[in-house]
Image (cartoon, one colour):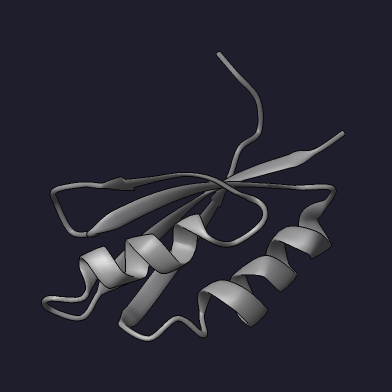
Length: 79
């Protein structure tokens, strides 16, 4: 069963659009939304398992220029 996660992303001032564009080009990133509040972007990702989500976040998302901080929230099921 696939693993779904919400990645809450804080960006450097003025970099949200560049970060969003970079996120959209990554395989495994399903949606990218600009939001208000303490985070600037929420990305929804899907991967085969928890390790693949971790690899996606650490090796591809964290390396995007303009990202300050991320919080990964794993989906535990629909309600």
